[in-house]
Every structure is written in C-alpha cells, then in structure tokens.
Amino acid sequence: MLRIIFLLFITIPLLELWLLIEVGSGIGGLSTIALCLFTAALGGLLIRWQGMSTLFDAQKRMAHGEAPVEHGMHGLMIAFAGVLLFTPGFITDSVGFLLLFPPFRRLVIHKLLPIQQINQPHQHQNNQDEIIDVEVITHDKHVP
Image (cartoon, helix red, strand yellow):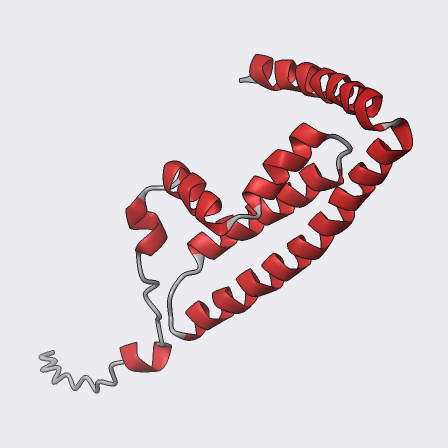
C-alpha cells in the first residue's frame, strides 16, 4: 500500500506538469494559469454549496433518528474534492469535479461500505423509555 501511495505521489505531479506544459503550449501560459485559477474558484463555490446541502440533509436524517453514515462519507469526499480542486493541475481538477457529482459519490460509497452499514437505521435510545421502576419486598424469616 505504501508503494502505491509513493508511486502516485511521484507520477501524478509529473503527469500534471506534463499536461500543464502541453495545454500552455496550446493556449498560452497566462490562459493556462487563468484556467487553473478559474477551476479552483469554481470548485470552491461548488464545494461550499455541496457541503452545506450535505450538512442539512444529515441534520434532517439525525432528527428522524437515522445515522447519517452515508452523509459523513459524502462530507469526506467533498473535502477530498476540495483538496484536489485547489491543487494546481487538470487531472486533479477532473477527479475533484467527479467527486462533486453526487451519483459518482454514491457509487464510490457503495463500493467502500457494505449496504447494510449505510442504510441501517440508527437505534435511537431514550433512557426514559427503558427505565423500569420496581419495588422489591423481601420477607426475611430470620430464625435465631
């Protein structure tokens, strides 16, 4: 696993650099920089909108006594999308924008988590409902 992470850490920046050079030679350096800044700004707006929407949906689910496991995963993916979108480059921006697409996030979530864990309703425990008030009377017949 560590080798895969190391390999991605090396190859993704090299691919990004190569793609930035290719795009820059095609549309110009300033246009490429402007495009990178535009995708970062657009991504920031979309992340804010998607994050607030996910938060409100999670609050609704919790109010109904359900565990917002899927919404938590959506939030993590939105945060990861934000990191990718603010990283300069077109490959990371593409993956970041894909993660902002809710059906794609659902697909990834269902691949990562078992369906039982995602859709399992949260058992809302109310301590007042579980209290059983009893009185115990014992008759000790103490014989000396």
